[in-house]
Image 1 (cartoon, helix red, strand yellow):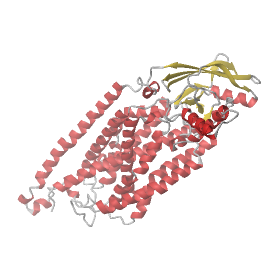
Image 2 (spheres, rainbow, N blue to C red):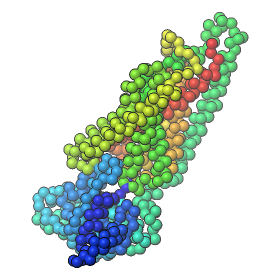
Image 3 (cartoon, rainbow, N blue to C red):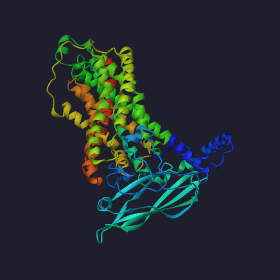
Length: 606
């Protein structure tokens, strides 16, 4: 989580105010004024480098407020009738696209806080409870509203009030006690305690107060976020046990592919290579059977080659972006910066757009596709359109609820500009390279002019059954990690064990590839050569099980409620599952394609 920022424009405004207060009545010279201005600007507090001198201003940003059980249903802090302090406001601008997309609504609290300066209990404002204000506060208290704030990019959470169940009365917390820890010139710890609850009654005057206590802390600046992590939740024993089980699954599947499967193939090779000892009648009587029978059709282009190439190109793209973002998280601890993970993902997706064009364009050329410009446009915009369509649908609900999650029009323009001026040109470059570098089919077997009829087979060999069964083992390999990821996103946990995520990602890749290889071998042995779509859908079916699990998680592991949170949850989970399905389907196709080309290039075919 990235936390508070203060733009350079804000700093200059504050410095100007400081200079006006400190400027003597009679200026001796313009040079002296310039020197004073430079000195004050150098000594001003800066939330970017987190260096403060004594009595420098420390800004308390109020972010959002919302029901505790609906983490994503957030509203502007001052949408409730809270009052701000008397200090002049400081304007804040979103510094990253991720901040804007995540609904960050930083507003200056108006509280005067200075570095290392203790403040006794001080009243900073008061609110008279009219009927409307009373109803707003009571609604917030009865729905367990919490608010979020930031000091020097450190998050703070506080409860709006408390409900007395004995007489069903609502109480409001009116005093905030800040305990600040510093190490040298840096803030390393912030704690806020809510005190002095006042009963909410019509016409009552609520006095809001605060106090600040500073104390030295041994915590190093680099370790100040450790207190927000929950090692008891992300138990390494559970992670290692899950990794061990998944790794044993990989060993089993790889062994199945290499030992059992290749032993069967060796027997087939021996039988097929006895052609010289057999006469024509023996061959015609059907000594050849199974996967070799379809050698003239196995490399036939799949149905709907344009759609297939778009999905494969997008799957490559999502897989590369996922790998890069996990690497960035491991190296940079992006969870300590608000919105940085989302911004990094958008940047990585835009920068790696040539991957989509290269693999999608080359595959479309190998299938004989001629409308490559249309394929390129659809490949560039297919996934962004799906993401934006889902986001805009949720955005309508957000606007109706006046939630902070509502995406502003300028942010929409920024996303559209990234798609038009970055993703599209880079996808074009990748498509041109893919068509020219690896656009030739180069199949080990020629394709028959007339498709071979597919014989009847047992029900469990049908492609639909294979697809449904193909996603069970990959889902089992990531099941434990899915629980941690879901809890981190939908509850108040910070996910930080990205080393485990990388291991799970690699295991998922191996398991998906091995499972689809085995499924494809059974399909080809049934003389069904429709392996391209089957291998893709068998891997993609993992996402179906993930989405089904999201229903279980919603109803049995959370206390979410309301139209907004329900739409937000299932809309984003559908988007996550779709991206996961495209990626896993691509993993399955890549492994299966290498396997199919290998076995048909080894067999002697006349």
